[in-house]
Amino acid sequence: MKTLIKVSLGILTSVGGYLEAGSIGTALQAGARFRFGLLWAIAFGTICLAFVSEMSGRLAAISKHTVVTAIRRRFGIRFQIWQLGLQSVVDVFVLASEIGGAAYALQLLTGISFRLWALPVALLIWGLLWRATFGAIEHSVAILGLVTLCFVVAAYRLHPEWRLVERGFLPHRPPSMIPQYIYLAVAILGATISPYLVTFYSSGAVEEKWTRNDLGANRLTAGFGFAFGSTISMAVVVVAALVLAPRGVVVDSFDKAAHVLDAVFGRWGLPLFVASLAIGCVGAALELALDLAYISAQCLGWNWSENQRPKDEARFAMIYTIAIVIAVLPSLAGLDPLQLTMFSMVLTVFALPFAVGPLVALMNDRDYLKTHTNGWISNIAVTTVLAIAFALALIAIPAQLMGGQ
Amino acid sequence: MTSIDLVRDLLDKRLQDRRGRFVGCVDSVVLEMDDDGSMTVAAVEVGAPAMLKRVHRVLGRWAHRLPVTRIPLSTLREIGSDIEVDIDAEHETQLLRVENWFRRHIVEHIPGNGR
Image (cartoon, rainbow over all chains, first blue to last red; front, side, top):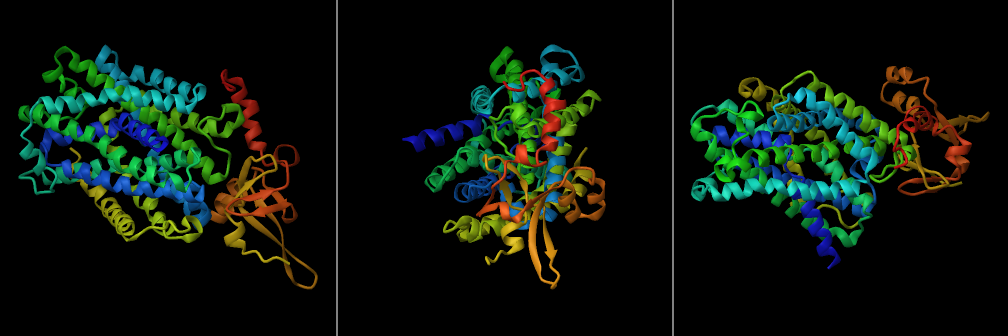
């Protein structure tokens, strides 16, 4: 019974917190341009993410160490400093995208420029981290985030031809715009398998003091949580495919898609879109800012906890504060949030091989996993993810240059 | 004599002080050479300069003004997946100097720091 509650809470958190600037942005563009043609990228990315998260949760449950602490111990600071340096840069870019996304949502609602909203949004995010315990934040974001399920309702009510939707789950050559297709596939995979999700997941597992008794719950949460979450992303693709694609709308900024839900929800369409984007972005921004503090603290061996007070671990609080200050700058400068998001998603792909690579070694090390080392399925999975991560990192820049327009 | 594998057992492990606070990682190990030429491990070092020196000496030089703390090997208690040390980091060492600086000069001036 306890396990059931734990798993349900975990899944609820994944679902409510799934959608954010990256997943909405890439899904809207994919649907508008290629209809159902990139659904496979979301599905595939989600399977990769589920495997990698399950491993990081298992590592935490058995070794009582997060991925970051274990990598420092196993590979030393000389490897980790580059890996975490890169991940931190990526995290800050993604954080900037989320702040921009939330600010842009408010622009859609009020007509006041996102440049003016950026500062209040950043202050809200910082204030929540400073004042509230993370448990409270996490649960309220998860509940509020359920508003994003409106995309699932809309996808269903628009009556897509399910036969065509199913076909989207197999990669195929699009009739035209092949560079854009590859570029969007890279961006979707970057948005789906974010390294911060993995470090964040393993931090949660250590914080909740998982033991070997939680391995079953870990498997279910990692599997179903992300699977249910990703159906929302897929719903965004379906809605964009049915509403935007026939009209030939190119989603180069969020306002082009602001009325995508109107066909189903009428005058409630815009508020629902705004709420989904704003809540999704603020939720992700909270996680990203915390994750930056987590990975620094874990690498340098400080006390870390989502619930410690700022004055008890001042350095921890300083890290997320500085991260938010840097991340608000692009929006203040007027950089378009969707463009920034797409750039960040492609950037994420570079951090991926360095985040996944160490797992291959760690998950087969009995010093850490005792008898719970990877079986052959997990080993094939993690090696495949690693190979794909390398391939993605290689084609990311050419894809961005050729397909980014 | 107990045998310790310096890299496997000491380097890059987290240190936990007497009060249970994690106070850093072992950033480097200090060896001492006796008159007869034999080496003994004297202490472990914690601090940004010690850590960055291992990454690149230029980085180490940049950080040279930050504190480095030497923890004598004799205070190391339990060497497991983390290392327990028999010291009070707050009162007996400089380990929390940067932390305390941030707390006193910035965090304590912002309301809500204790929630």
